[in-house]
Length: 202
Length: 238
Image 1 (cartoon, rainbow over the protein chains, first blue to last red):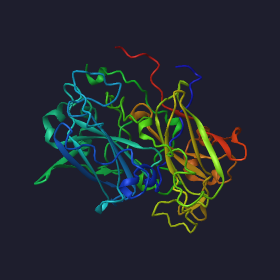
Image 2 (spheres, helix red, strand yellow):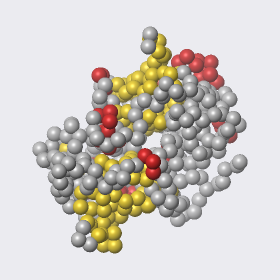
Image 3 (cartoon, rainbow over the protein chains, first blue to last red):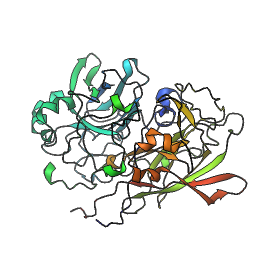
Image 4 (cartoon, rainbow over the protein chains, first blue to last red):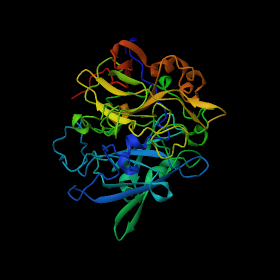
């Protein structure tokens, strides 16, 4: 790599007041949103699911000013992005795979996504969703992954999950909760301590 | 192709350019910063892709914060222009990428309902906007110079004037949320958020005044170029 490489612009915290710029509709501000917590419509292909969770700080308190983003494949395991040219996996015009939600509007400081369960992105990989965490007090965003409890066999084979220390893998597995209204997965994010969520050096 | 054979299109973060997670001077990091080692794993196509937002996601007034919050008149404060290029580490432009901005008004007050600072709101200024870079990676906002405001981090703590920026770039690994500062601000050297950045990298967040960007009889101009993580130099195999 040449020495004259430009240097990355440093990260700074998203701060406490992002809502009227980044999640305006969720918080009742006028700017039209670019996305929301609702990724899937009735027309989206795949199994409709909800993902709910809370973010906990190092004292075990829920964080009420975090912003969570998710990025996932569609039900065919295809990403809505030009770098994914795998024509054998169909794109879904009703799904772009990106969602964003703040933790400041739902009771208990929950985030909630309405989406579909992603397909496996390639043979041998368990279905998963990339999760990015931003908040006041976090100077650079954190990346983690959400896996699904009801994919135990696939999770056991997953080549990425298998690179995570065994005792910490459970922090990436969302718990399934069935209700009369559908399937919901619970994914809590713990910033610190022995039970902290695994964050990746992406 | 197995996960371990996947040739990542993008390299690792350059940690010498970024603040750490726990910063003694910035109180909120103590309970919120990541305190366990980050785990290194192979990456997949999932990390070399990301949301695609183009010009169709931006409205005509979205990049003019002096107009997009108007109710019954012009917002108060000093009109400014903020412009620059988004480049990758190799100096190549990052075209067609979404930039989101938000900021305090001229009095140092945020529209956010939680901001309790005793400074006036401006009924004609919302303080948020967005734009998409052009084919050369250029962007341009019109706005009002934000004021400084106090915060509770330590006694007599004031944030320097700043504009928040959120960028995507081509993949989720190029995602960047940052803050742009203004040249000559005496609060910079007192600000733990700014000083959380390694010393050699801090000045990259300070914009430059430009008389060439300045529009006569209208607004002062500032240049803020942004560098996102670049793709690996080695071409990918097909």
